[in-house]
Length: 319
Image (cartoon, rainbow, N blue to C red; front, side, top):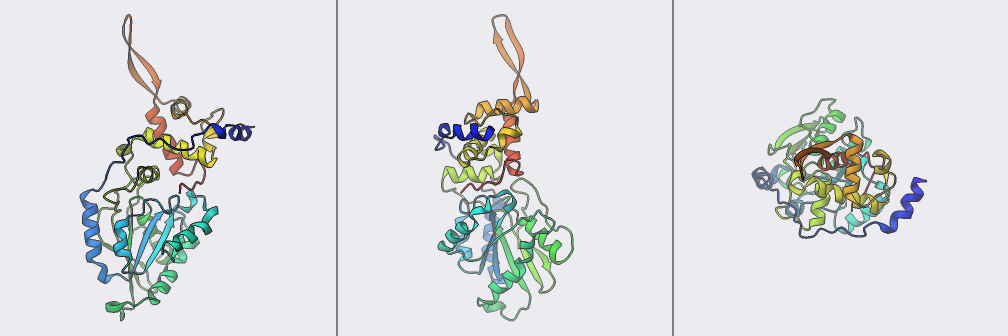
């Protein structure tokens, strides 16, 4: 019945998102600029570039500033967080990436204790390296890889997953759900014994200027830009628009709505009521000021966004 109601309402959903005069905040702290500079300075000791990106946005938000780096070294693109993405269109994604010059692609879920795709990484990287000239590193029997990507796409999770898989050791990199956790530049970490493979960990680096507001909104929704720089209620509204557009209505059951809605204020108020999230505000009346309780829409937006990032609202492909 709910599915029927959802399908009946599809015609009333927005077909485009009104960004108005909004701008996505530029977030390019000093450690990012320093990291990018040192990455370029250390390329001579690197055999292969490992670029990690969020599988939910395989095309949006990849940093064009990396292109200069990628053009001079063998390159493997890892689309991480595949457990959160709708990968039914995997072949279409791979074909489009190939047209854009990206031939080596691997989908991973690095938070999984045992991810079979992570086991493929070292053999894949060795094949890529051996099929390209190594020049000054030709006589070395060990391999050095540089891990790059925008913030919060799973670089540290990949390093820890490789160490679990190949060395049976615990984590070497701190993992967090917000961008900006890794700030150290070019920390050298061993991840494999046979062959000997080291990774150079790097901080996440965003483009100094994001190409479009919609790209920035997708990055924000996936947790790559700090929420408060964009606004949690704006991010939640873009999420609602995206879920309805994709026909993913899991939020209806999760939050006890009667049917899907395209009205973010209505949805946030219902979520706030269900979760008991209220705030006290002053109201002016004819007999003076009184304090009343109202639904806390900011707290509701926070919960909706976090539910999406945990995969509780279904597997989606934003691109």
